[in-house]
Image (tube, rainbow, N blue to C red; front, side):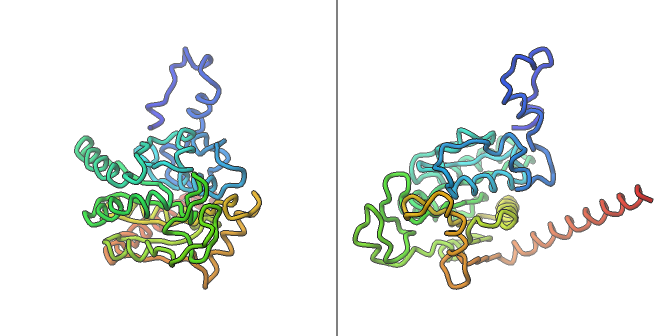
Length: 302
C-alpha cells in the first residue's frame, strides 16, 4: 500500500470518511527515517485497538509497525491469538493464517511475491504468539528456517495461551502456576532463540519491548538481513498482565524486571558473519548520509 495507491480524487475528497482523509494526508509510507517516534502522529500505526487496557502487545505492535523499513511493500502474516485482533486496525497488508501454519503461508507468499514482482523489494514478516510459533507451529517454523526462507519471524512471547484462558505453553517458565495450569510448569522454558540459531537463522534477538528505540533497531536489522541473506527470528516478551495477575499499568515494569542481566529476557543477540557484513555496510551508508545532510545544513546556515 503506497501513497500513490490510496490517493483520493479531488472531486470526492470532501465526502470520504475523515479517517481515510487523515490516512492519505499523514501516512508514513515512503518516509525514509520513519520510526517509533512517529507513533501518535501516523494514522496507520494503530490509534485504537481491541486488546486489553495496558496490554504490552499493543506497545509491541506499534513499535514494530513503525519500524518496518518498507511498509507499503510489506505483507505481514499472523495467526490465531491476541495478535489477530489487532491486524484489522492497521493499514499494512496482512494475511490471517490457520493456527500454527503462519511460516508455511509466509514461505509460499515470499516466493510468489519474488516471482510476481522481480527486482522489487517485497518484505514478508510473520507475527504470532508463542503457542502458534513454538507449540502448534514448531514444525513449520523450523522447516522455513531449514529451507532458508527469506523472511522475518517475530514471536510475541507471553509465556502462556493468553487468548484462550491461560493454558500452559512450551514457553512458560518452569514452576509458573496459571489458571489452567494449576500444578505449575514441570519443565524449563523452550529455548527457541538457541534453536533458531542452530536451525540457520542469520539474526536472532531475545528481548522485551520496554525500550522502543531498541525494538526499532532490532526489527529493521531483522528485515534487512532476511531480505538479503536468509531467515531471522525475534522473540519479544509481551506479558499477558491479566493472566499473570498484574494490574493494567504494571506491564512495563514486568518487562523491565524480566530483562535484568540474570533473567530470562536479558538482551541476547546472535548475528551470522554474512549478516554482520551486511549490517556494517548499511551502517556505513547511513553514517555517510547523515554526514552529507549535516554538511548541507551547515552550508545553508553559512
